[in-house]
Image 1 (spheres, one colour):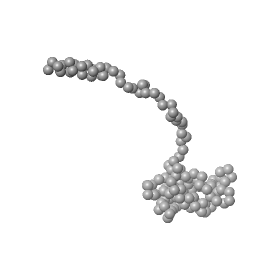
Image 2 (cartoon, one colour):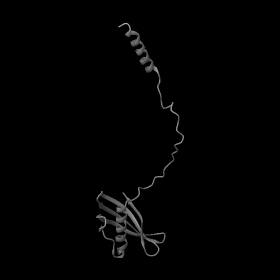
Image 3 (tube, helix red, strand yellow):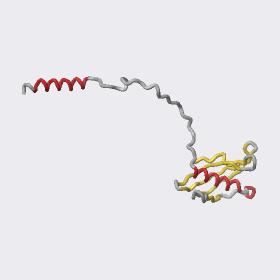
Image 4 (cartoon, helix red, strand yellow):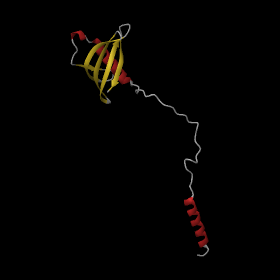
Length: 137
């Protein structure tokens, strides 16, 4: 037992010495200057193909309306290509820099749920209507 005692004491001394040492910290590790980051401009997430197709369908319905007869309270729309459907409300016409535009609010029921959108479609050169805004609320 006496032969083991010095070994036991040496082992305990090493363990205690290790507890007292600082070890490796983040300050000891060299900084990696090869990584460069920058600010990223916040942009809206890109719309998927289904949403773009639905926006085109809504644009076509809004542009085909005869608002001289009065705007309907609600107007149903459906896109057979995507299976989405919804209703258009608060359709109004205004002039934006000489271009005729129509603002609207639309509901969109699709496979990913129900959402509310606010949009605007304007008559572009050549007599074609273009969706200038289609924002999810």
